[in-house]
Figure 1: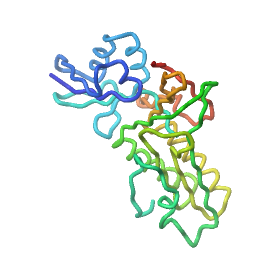
Figure 2 (figure 1 turned 90 degrees about the vertical axis):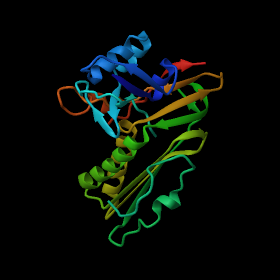
Figure 3 (figure 1 turned 30 degrees about the vertical axis):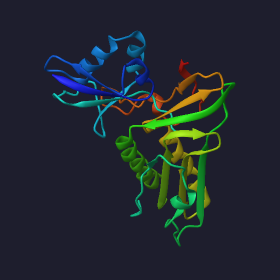
Length: 81
Length: 170
């Protein structure tokens, strides 16, 4: 199945665009998506260990099951203010 | 919280007058105000400007939750926060927060808690642009929840430490 990944903050520097599509074997969880993203580069793998993940306006855990068409948001450590 | 509604994440210059509008309460003797403004230096480097980005739907929800949590925790009737996104020049306001309460002690305490929570929990990122042409994201607080279902990551607690910059980019 194909899902979309929206890259925020520093994660954007390690991918080719704000939103990227990735293909996963079913069934898949958030952890599977992150593992595939981590394989792209060591820098990406490092920052992913510190990322929260959201679907819509909800934070989801690593074991959250994915459905085709889901859009994940990668949320690296935050620094507002 | 109040019936007064407005976007917590805004892409234009923040207005204290707008934030205060309709917040007056006859039972409150204290109003505390915080403005976080863009500084021209960070860890010895000259900063020319900042860019803030956000996951807006989640940030909107989380700021509202933090306002409500702060009101309950400190028993104050009114808290409001707005945060700017986009490109900001030195001196511009990145965040405005207000608290109204019966007395000043809880107004100061609640304001500090409110601002700390927004800075450490809400999905907003700060990218600094330096005089040498490079830029970096300010390293912040991890907001991932522990996988065992416990509270958010220990780094997401209240703290005053300075955050360093990483991922320099020319």
